[in-house]
Length: 209
Image 1 (cartoon, rainbow, N blue to C red):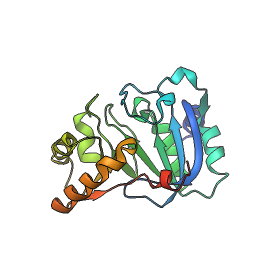
Image 2: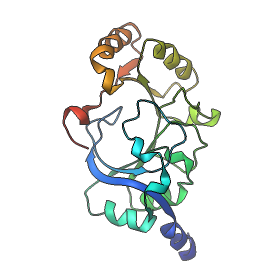
Image 3: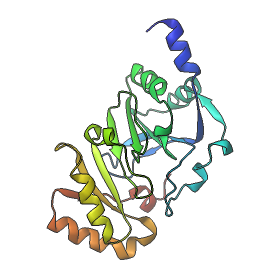
Image 4: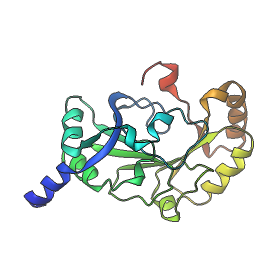
């Protein structure tokens, strides 16, 4: 990469709601220290979203790749998770290139509603009924995570599981506000369909970001 290309990457800006070093609470990497960068802007609009304040990108200031890198390097993080909002609304290539150049693993959590660019270490696809994924995301995904709100979501989960690769990890996650009613249903479903695993929002049980 030329110096000009690197400088252009470092200057690239994204609307950022928040950034913080924590423990990954969900899915395959649950329990792993990770630095989260939550980009602002979302056109999916889940009714049960717990970060609705991230939806409007104009409510949040922009940060350059250089500024985000500076914050990440203050921590001992080895894993970087890009989330949202819906992060795939943006060209994330400059951010991915810079993080990988530092020897960091870079992951994304996306609904798949937009074409994903960039060479990612890990792609967590969490499709939503409100805006379906683009076809190209399925075979790229390392992890499929379905949020279970009611019984009909098991059928929804199987429909999407049929589209991902055989190596994709499959997770069912009870929606937090309905966990008292839904968790037992998820347990029973996974026992009957053992290719699925349960994902819990352990960061909420631990009361950490």
